[in-house]
Length: 140
Image (cartoon, rainbow, N blue to C red; front, side, top):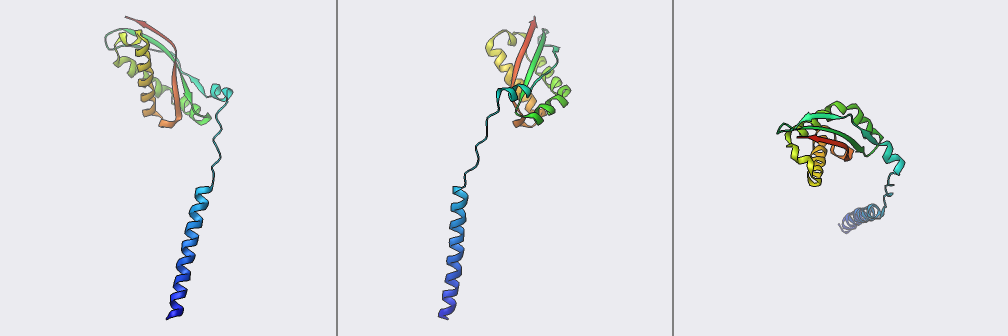
């Protein structure tokens, strides 16, 4: 009876020691830091889109050229492959805004954020870093 107790106690202590040791090992294990992309890599991952021309919600006309900043080579290829879908989403964003939206810096920032949200619905959310307005012309 006493021998069984010591065997069970040894098993419990062994399992406890392995659990604590494993937890300390996992906690102490350091992950390698992610290297920030170089300027050359970031430039390679920029995808210029063709010019978009569409009407605004109040009848104005907007011509815009945008550049998409992807986070990697695969993401940049996804943007190039799905460019027509992205252009359609950008057209819808422009079409839903009044032409006065594009006349102020705050309006342009709002437009950039709306385009980024629209692109995130078409592509996985973490693939696109930002949207740059290369050129925008608004005619009321």
